[in-house]
Image (cartoon, rainbow over all chains, first blue to last red; front, side):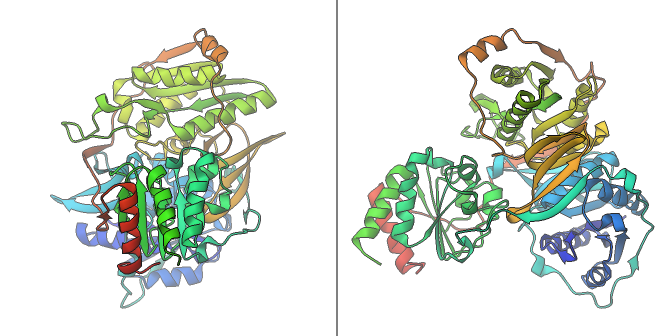
Length: 327
Length: 256
């Protein structure tokens, strides 16, 4: 039995979460006493194979086919399902990317297996793996175990495992290239080019101070409260997803997995509960301040300073206090 | 178009979450319930497609008796009829088993398009729709922000990470998981609520669909997450706390 890490690349460039998944796979391999293999999918991927072979894995499984050059859930499942059947691993570990969310449930179902998605932790108890994942948008954690037969499918949340723990191999691992059989008629989806929406007018990534608002602001009419605080701090105004979904602020001001990733000197989260989709976009900030009425909001898990209270009182008080002592 | 919307009833966002005696779930007596937010966007998208292209919108939910309220709400907003797969155990079942039950019900009619939210706000597996598509043998796409009906199928806009998108084309029947914010959801009108009472709501059970509820993983324990950072909570009234916070940001953290 082994552990198989399925890596992710787009156009020859790794998704950075690949290395976190590799590090997690190697950690699980050590804890469970299983060798670790890594799979890579694509068409012309020689350099990726070589790179992977030097990343501490026992072997590389390279699935190459012209129909794997561009991702589709059909082609990925058709390539991976037979490879996994042959390898019969104990565990299949994937980075929890948008692409993995698109095909991993299908792949597991095609093999009549289940998939525990978006893990934040892992440990071994009595020789059995126990997986930690979040419930209720990060407000609770749960220890989860598989009860059926392996292979078990898991995906790892962004930032949950450290990629810098990844060892270099003493000698490169062997690269296997099993035959991939896919016919163009089996691909039901025609994917178009990847693109970005109209040019951004605000560059949040370079802002030193960001004041971000969430659902707690309640109504669009209340936004000036946060805007004034941002002005007083000399920072930019940003928001969590629901605010931009409502059209209260333009999408370009959205922080999180589907928006921008920022790492300012100071991040002030106003009325943001801190769902993981938001946290991944801002947890690299140097100092995080959270203002929220709910003391159990997950945002406090990443905050350096917190005020548990009514933002409609606290935010104007901050703005006024700042006005007293000009910067 | 015959459109199927799969929706889930979940604990309301501002619910008080307290761990129950089994330590495997939260105390249900504390909870109020609502339609899972991404599913509400899926319903709205289905209603808009029907208004534009004609057809019917059917709402399907698997859950305990209380989930009927979520279906009624969808009927009040304009869905034509509902199907409720009722079983107490369905409330927190793994997405694979839930998908099995939903797919079995979906198979009974020739649906052109199946829509559901990209994930649930409670368990958040984010898998049910994709597993359903695989079980039904139809193509799917996830995290969809736009749907356009075409002569030979649909063209959809899929959200990728970090502000990137992609258009995809696929034939029907197909299944799409819908991202929050794809549209602006409507409210039910008084007339709609009245009409909903006369609309068909079919009740099924997992047994009647031939689906065994055999979970293949289990939640051993739930608990509050541990903090990764030591948060300094600043006490006092708004004015006092604001002054103390700025003091700390200036002289301790030195970011101002």
